[in-house]
Length: 303
Image 1: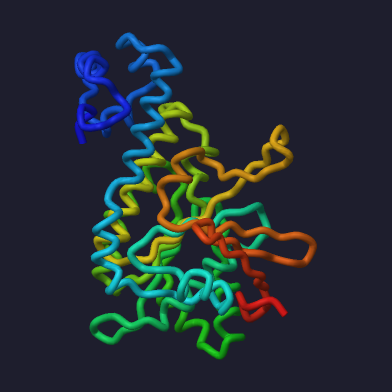
Image 2: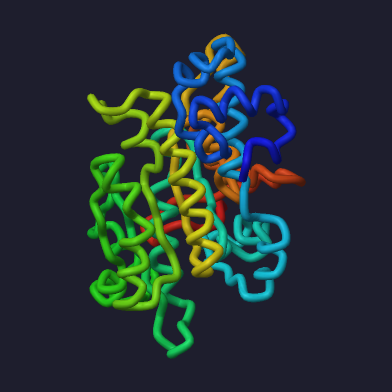
Protein backbone atom coordinates (compact mmCIF):
# COMPACT_ATOMS: atom_id res chain seq x y z
CA UNK A 1 0.00 0.00 0.00
CA UNK A 2 1.33 3.44 -0.94
CA UNK A 3 1.68 6.02 1.82
CA UNK A 4 -0.41 8.31 -0.39
CA UNK A 5 -3.35 5.94 0.14
CA UNK A 6 -3.26 6.32 3.93
CA UNK A 7 -5.03 8.93 6.05
CA UNK A 8 -2.17 9.48 8.51
CA UNK A 9 0.45 11.01 6.14
CA UNK A 10 -0.24 14.28 4.29
CA UNK A 11 0.62 14.61 0.58
CA UNK A 12 3.49 17.04 1.18
CA UNK A 13 4.87 14.66 3.80
CA UNK A 14 4.66 11.78 1.32
CA UNK A 15 6.84 13.71 -1.11
CA UNK A 16 9.53 14.20 1.53
CA UNK A 17 9.41 10.52 2.50
CA UNK A 18 9.57 9.37 -1.12
CA UNK A 19 12.74 11.43 -1.56
CA UNK A 20 14.23 9.37 1.28
CA UNK A 21 13.14 6.14 -0.45
CA UNK A 22 10.08 5.53 1.72
CA UNK A 23 7.05 5.25 -0.55
CA UNK A 24 4.94 2.45 0.90
CA UNK A 25 3.57 1.35 4.26
CA UNK A 26 5.98 -1.57 4.12
CA UNK A 27 8.92 0.81 3.59
CA UNK A 28 7.85 2.87 6.61
CA UNK A 29 7.50 -0.24 8.74
CA UNK A 30 11.15 -1.18 8.26
CA UNK A 31 12.60 2.33 8.22
CA UNK A 32 14.33 3.57 11.37
CA UNK A 33 13.06 6.61 13.24
CA UNK A 34 16.40 8.25 12.48
CA UNK A 35 15.95 7.74 8.72
CA UNK A 36 12.51 9.33 8.76
CA UNK A 37 13.73 12.15 10.99
CA UNK A 38 16.54 12.87 8.50
CA UNK A 39 13.85 13.48 5.87
CA UNK A 40 12.75 16.56 7.83
CA UNK A 41 10.41 15.18 10.49
CA UNK A 42 10.53 15.61 14.25
CA UNK A 43 11.39 12.55 16.32
CA UNK A 44 7.83 12.48 17.70
CA UNK A 45 6.33 12.58 14.19
CA UNK A 46 8.82 9.97 12.96
CA UNK A 47 7.80 7.60 15.75
CA UNK A 48 4.10 8.11 14.93
CA UNK A 49 4.72 7.28 11.25
CA UNK A 50 6.51 4.05 12.20
CA UNK A 51 3.79 3.10 14.71
CA UNK A 52 0.99 3.79 12.22
CA UNK A 53 2.78 1.78 9.54
CA UNK A 54 3.24 -1.08 11.99
CA UNK A 55 -0.45 -1.04 12.93
CA UNK A 56 -1.54 -0.89 9.28
CA UNK A 57 0.69 -3.80 8.33
CA UNK A 58 -0.47 -6.14 11.10
CA UNK A 59 -4.12 -5.22 10.58
CA UNK A 60 -4.11 -5.98 6.86
CA UNK A 61 -5.98 -8.87 5.26
CA UNK A 62 -8.93 -9.41 7.54
CA UNK A 63 -12.53 -8.27 7.04
CA UNK A 64 -14.19 -9.80 4.01
CA UNK A 65 -11.58 -12.56 3.63
CA UNK A 66 -12.19 -13.80 7.15
CA UNK A 67 -15.94 -13.63 6.57
CA UNK A 68 -15.74 -15.66 3.37
CA UNK A 69 -13.63 -18.31 5.13
CA UNK A 70 -15.92 -18.57 8.15
CA UNK A 71 -17.76 -21.59 6.78
CA UNK A 72 -14.53 -23.62 6.44
CA UNK A 73 -13.10 -22.63 9.83
CA UNK A 74 -12.84 -25.44 12.38
CA UNK A 75 -12.42 -25.37 16.16
CA UNK A 76 -9.89 -27.11 18.40
CA UNK A 77 -11.10 -27.82 21.93
CA UNK A 78 -9.07 -26.37 24.79
CA UNK A 79 -10.21 -29.17 27.12
CA UNK A 80 -12.37 -26.73 29.08
CA UNK A 81 -16.00 -26.66 27.99
CA UNK A 82 -16.46 -23.21 29.53
CA UNK A 83 -13.48 -21.75 27.66
CA UNK A 84 -14.59 -23.42 24.43
CA UNK A 85 -18.04 -21.89 24.87
CA UNK A 86 -16.52 -18.42 25.43
CA UNK A 87 -14.87 -18.75 21.99
CA UNK A 88 -17.93 -20.25 20.28
CA UNK A 89 -16.46 -23.74 20.17
CA UNK A 90 -12.71 -23.49 20.75
CA UNK A 91 -9.52 -22.21 19.12
CA UNK A 92 -10.37 -21.42 15.46
CA UNK A 93 -8.42 -22.45 12.40
CA UNK A 94 -7.70 -19.68 9.90
CA UNK A 95 -6.71 -17.27 12.66
CA UNK A 96 -3.82 -16.26 14.90
CA UNK A 97 -4.70 -16.66 18.59
CA UNK A 98 -2.55 -14.94 21.21
CA UNK A 99 -2.48 -16.54 24.68
CA UNK A 100 -0.73 -14.27 27.15
CA UNK A 101 -0.16 -13.94 30.87
CA UNK A 102 2.43 -14.10 33.64
CA UNK A 103 4.73 -17.06 34.20
CA UNK A 104 2.99 -20.13 35.63
CA UNK A 105 -0.58 -19.29 34.58
CA UNK A 106 -0.89 -22.27 32.21
CA UNK A 107 0.06 -20.96 28.75
CA UNK A 108 2.32 -23.88 27.82
CA UNK A 109 -0.07 -26.42 29.38
CA UNK A 110 -2.89 -25.08 27.20
CA UNK A 111 -0.67 -25.29 24.11
CA UNK A 112 0.21 -28.92 24.86
CA UNK A 113 -3.50 -29.67 25.28
CA UNK A 114 -4.22 -28.15 21.87
CA UNK A 115 -1.49 -30.34 20.31
CA UNK A 116 -3.38 -33.37 21.60
CA UNK A 117 -6.88 -32.20 20.73
CA UNK A 118 -6.08 -31.07 17.17
CA UNK A 119 -5.47 -34.75 16.37
CA UNK A 120 -9.19 -35.36 16.88
CA UNK A 121 -9.82 -33.34 13.70
CA UNK A 122 -9.44 -35.16 10.38
CA UNK A 123 -7.88 -34.17 7.08
CA UNK A 124 -9.51 -34.53 3.66
CA UNK A 125 -7.84 -37.96 3.49
CA UNK A 126 -9.35 -38.88 6.88
CA UNK A 127 -6.00 -38.61 8.68
CA UNK A 128 -5.62 -36.98 12.11
CA UNK A 129 -4.23 -33.47 11.85
CA UNK A 130 -0.72 -32.86 13.19
CA UNK A 131 0.79 -29.99 15.20
CA UNK A 132 4.05 -28.07 14.86
CA UNK A 133 5.43 -26.85 18.20
CA UNK A 134 7.92 -24.00 17.83
CA UNK A 135 9.95 -23.68 21.03
CA UNK A 136 11.85 -20.39 21.45
CA UNK A 137 12.62 -20.55 25.17
CA UNK A 138 12.98 -24.23 26.15
CA UNK A 139 9.41 -24.73 27.39
CA UNK A 140 8.41 -27.77 25.29
CA UNK A 141 8.04 -30.90 27.46
CA UNK A 142 7.22 -34.02 25.38
CA UNK A 143 7.02 -36.14 28.53
CA UNK A 144 4.24 -33.90 29.85
CA UNK A 145 2.39 -34.17 26.57
CA UNK A 146 2.58 -37.98 26.77
CA UNK A 147 1.36 -37.87 30.39
CA UNK A 148 -1.64 -35.72 29.48
CA UNK A 149 -2.56 -37.93 26.52
CA UNK A 150 -2.32 -41.19 28.48
CA UNK A 151 -4.33 -39.82 31.40
CA UNK A 152 -7.00 -38.91 28.86
CA UNK A 153 -7.13 -42.51 27.60
CA UNK A 154 -4.99 -41.98 24.48
CA UNK A 155 -1.74 -43.65 23.42
CA UNK A 156 0.96 -41.15 24.34
CA UNK A 157 3.63 -42.25 21.87
CA UNK A 158 1.14 -42.22 19.00
CA UNK A 159 0.07 -38.70 19.93
CA UNK A 160 3.72 -37.61 20.14
CA UNK A 161 4.38 -38.93 16.63
CA UNK A 162 2.06 -36.23 15.26
CA UNK A 163 3.70 -33.33 17.12
CA UNK A 164 6.66 -31.93 15.23
CA UNK A 165 9.13 -29.93 17.29
CA UNK A 166 11.22 -26.99 16.07
CA UNK A 167 13.70 -24.99 18.13
CA UNK A 168 13.91 -21.33 17.06
CA UNK A 169 16.68 -19.43 18.86
CA UNK A 170 17.05 -16.34 16.68
CA UNK A 171 15.01 -13.74 14.81
CA UNK A 172 16.20 -15.26 11.53
CA UNK A 173 15.10 -18.79 12.44
CA UNK A 174 11.71 -17.64 13.68
CA UNK A 175 11.07 -15.37 10.70
CA UNK A 176 11.68 -18.33 8.36
CA UNK A 177 8.77 -20.26 9.90
CA UNK A 178 6.18 -19.74 7.13
CA UNK A 179 8.29 -21.63 4.56
CA UNK A 180 9.14 -24.32 7.13
CA UNK A 181 5.46 -24.76 7.94
CA UNK A 182 4.57 -25.18 4.27
CA UNK A 183 7.23 -27.90 3.97
CA UNK A 184 5.90 -29.74 7.04
CA UNK A 185 2.35 -29.62 5.75
CA UNK A 186 3.48 -31.66 2.75
CA UNK A 187 4.78 -34.42 5.04
CA UNK A 188 1.56 -34.62 7.00
CA UNK A 189 -1.48 -32.33 7.06
CA UNK A 190 -1.07 -29.71 9.78
CA UNK A 191 -3.96 -28.29 11.76
CA UNK A 192 -2.07 -26.34 14.43
CA UNK A 193 1.11 -24.30 14.82
CA UNK A 194 2.22 -23.23 18.30
CA UNK A 195 4.90 -20.59 18.90
CA UNK A 196 5.91 -20.58 22.55
CA UNK A 197 7.03 -17.81 23.24
CA UNK A 198 6.36 -15.30 20.41
CA UNK A 199 8.52 -12.37 21.59
CA UNK A 200 11.50 -14.24 23.08
CA UNK A 201 13.80 -13.81 20.09
CA UNK A 202 12.55 -10.40 18.97
CA UNK A 203 12.61 -8.61 22.32
CA UNK A 204 14.80 -10.48 24.78
CA UNK A 205 17.57 -12.06 22.71
CA UNK A 206 20.52 -9.66 22.27
CA UNK A 207 21.51 -8.76 18.73
CA UNK A 208 24.52 -6.83 17.48
CA UNK A 209 22.99 -6.31 14.05
CA UNK A 210 19.49 -5.12 15.00
CA UNK A 211 18.30 -2.33 17.24
CA UNK A 212 15.33 -2.89 19.55
CA UNK A 213 13.10 -0.80 17.25
CA UNK A 214 14.14 -2.83 14.21
CA UNK A 215 13.36 -6.06 16.05
CA UNK A 216 9.94 -4.74 17.03
CA UNK A 217 9.22 -3.93 13.39
CA UNK A 218 10.36 -7.39 12.34
CA UNK A 219 8.00 -8.78 14.97
CA UNK A 220 5.15 -6.84 13.36
CA UNK A 221 6.01 -8.30 9.94
CA UNK A 222 6.31 -11.78 11.45
CA UNK A 223 2.79 -11.53 12.87
CA UNK A 224 1.51 -10.29 9.54
CA UNK A 225 3.12 -13.26 7.76
CA UNK A 226 1.57 -15.63 10.30
CA UNK A 227 -1.82 -14.00 9.79
CA UNK A 228 -1.64 -14.57 6.03
CA UNK A 229 -0.45 -18.14 6.53
CA UNK A 230 -3.28 -18.93 8.95
CA UNK A 231 -5.94 -17.66 6.57
CA UNK A 232 -4.42 -19.02 3.35
CA UNK A 233 -3.88 -22.52 4.80
CA UNK A 234 -6.83 -22.57 7.23
CA UNK A 235 -4.36 -23.28 10.06
CA UNK A 236 -4.84 -22.54 13.73
CA UNK A 237 -1.76 -20.54 14.74
CA UNK A 238 -1.39 -20.08 18.49
CA UNK A 239 1.29 -17.82 19.98
CA UNK A 240 2.05 -17.29 23.64
CA UNK A 241 3.41 -14.12 25.17
CA UNK A 242 4.55 -12.87 28.55
CA UNK A 243 3.48 -9.67 30.30
CA UNK A 244 5.09 -6.84 32.19
CA UNK A 245 3.62 -4.93 35.11
CA UNK A 246 3.09 -1.17 34.91
CA UNK A 247 3.79 -0.02 38.46
CA UNK A 248 2.88 3.58 37.60
CA UNK A 249 -0.57 2.41 36.48
CA UNK A 250 -1.52 0.49 39.58
CA UNK A 251 0.13 -2.79 38.63
CA UNK A 252 -1.71 -3.29 35.34
CA UNK A 253 -0.41 -6.11 33.12
CA UNK A 254 0.44 -5.39 29.48
CA UNK A 255 1.87 -7.67 26.84
CA UNK A 256 5.55 -7.62 25.95
CA UNK A 257 6.11 -6.36 22.42
CA UNK A 258 4.01 -3.19 22.39
CA UNK A 259 1.52 -2.41 19.65
CA UNK A 260 2.65 -5.31 17.43
CA UNK A 261 1.24 -7.90 19.82
CA UNK A 262 -1.94 -5.89 20.32
CA UNK A 263 -2.80 -5.42 16.64
CA UNK A 264 -1.36 -8.55 15.04
CA UNK A 265 -3.40 -11.49 16.44
CA UNK A 266 -7.05 -12.01 15.51
CA UNK A 267 -8.00 -13.37 18.94
CA UNK A 268 -6.47 -12.77 22.38
CA UNK A 269 -6.86 -14.78 25.58
CA UNK A 270 -5.52 -13.40 28.86
CA UNK A 271 -4.66 -16.04 31.45
CA UNK A 272 -4.35 -15.12 35.13
CA UNK A 273 -3.76 -16.99 38.37
CA UNK A 274 -4.66 -15.77 41.85
CA UNK A 275 -3.91 -18.19 44.65
CA UNK A 276 -5.17 -21.51 43.21
CA UNK A 277 -7.78 -20.05 40.86
CA UNK A 278 -7.04 -19.67 37.17
CA UNK A 279 -9.07 -17.48 34.83
CA UNK A 280 -9.12 -17.08 31.05
CA UNK A 281 -10.52 -13.87 29.59
CA UNK A 282 -11.37 -13.65 25.90
CA UNK A 283 -10.25 -10.08 25.13
CA UNK A 284 -12.90 -9.23 22.57
CA UNK A 285 -16.47 -8.06 23.14
CA UNK A 286 -18.27 -9.20 25.25
CA UNK A 287 -15.00 -10.01 27.12
CA UNK A 288 -16.03 -13.32 28.62
CA UNK A 289 -14.08 -14.61 31.63
CA UNK A 290 -14.16 -18.25 32.76
CA UNK A 291 -12.41 -20.37 35.38
CA UNK A 292 -10.30 -23.34 34.34
CA UNK A 293 -7.94 -25.87 35.93
CA UNK A 294 -4.68 -27.61 35.04
CA UNK A 295 -4.75 -31.21 36.25
CA UNK A 296 -2.69 -34.31 35.52
CA UNK A 297 -5.12 -35.07 32.67
CA UNK A 298 -4.58 -31.58 31.23
CA UNK A 299 -6.84 -28.55 30.84
CA UNK A 300 -10.39 -28.83 32.18
CA UNK A 301 -13.18 -26.87 33.84
CA UNK A 302 -12.55 -25.74 37.40
CA UNK A 303 -14.61 -27.53 40.07
